[in-house]
Image (cartoon, rainbow, N blue to C red; front, side):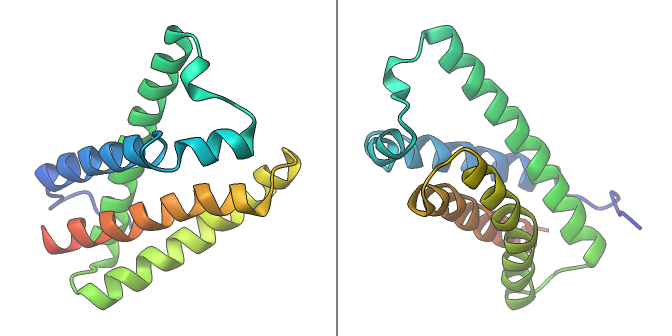
Length: 137
């Protein structure tokens, strides 16, 4: 049964902000943005402002829902220790993110390097988010 009672909404909010900040850096020119642009063939810096803003808002909102879902899952599974939290994050990342994004990447004719660039972002975020939500119950 999914357990919503007892969620720490401050932890959810902070985790969401951390996710958005990491994503903004990861895909920026200071992070892996140049490599992402090269591998994808899309220059983010040349997107019209309304398209870029719409994408940023959509990603931020979807990230919030992802953090809420993760918090509910951890709460429902009663994950309260670090090692089980990390194992849960790895399992969720592998089973839902890594596997799903392989198909998307291959059908879009992108390279494995492109897949890893995106998948590793989600790996880092999933582990970090799980740790924050577990420690800050």
